[in-house]
Length: 265
Image 1 (cartoon, helix red, strand yellow):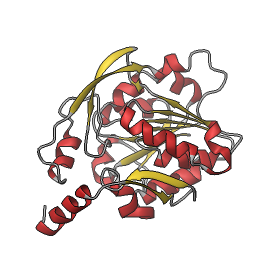
Image 2: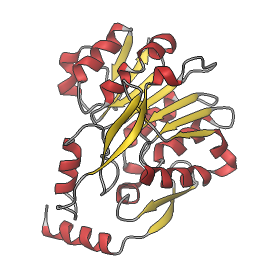
Image 3: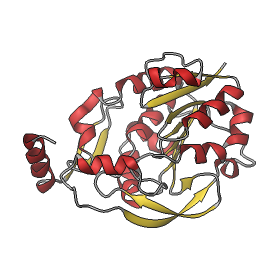
């Protein structure tokens, strides 16, 4: 890390405070911490712009959107805005620290859109039990059920907190199949961002995916081959965030982007 960037990060950390910015897509106020959540104000509308364009195209008014791993709600609030008052948004976020900002940002939504959003303070996975949750104390974006998650290690090296250590907590985890058991409505769009635990989430969601075949976005950090095989077997088309089709797993490396999209034919 360059000396200038290191110095700037130290200054931002030393002067950190909670504030609100204008959400770049909803127009609502958005609560964050100037250091821990700096990516949102620093990158602005350029942050994951390709991904957001696909959200705007695929998520329709009246849809039911499900988000697994919400951080502080930047996408959650966008989903509420896209589905509108006749839609529904369920959000899984097991971190209490993240959930504090998440719930505040839902309340800040215009036109009472927060009323259509349900926050579930649990993890999603392939079991119904309590698991150790490894919390990233820098940004909360690298929280994971995977010990020694590589994303946190990389983030720490590029931060002003090189000596900070993971915090361990025990949280409740449920399968999404159990969450939707007996439900009269199933999600139309699903986003999974769980830092290396994505295949576990999919395994606990298989029955519902087979039944509903929702459009999906997964930030794939591990087990890409298993995830691709599963969705190909169900007749899904797979895209990167530039909407380039990935017709076979052998093409994945050449067309790989951080977020991968799945749509049933």
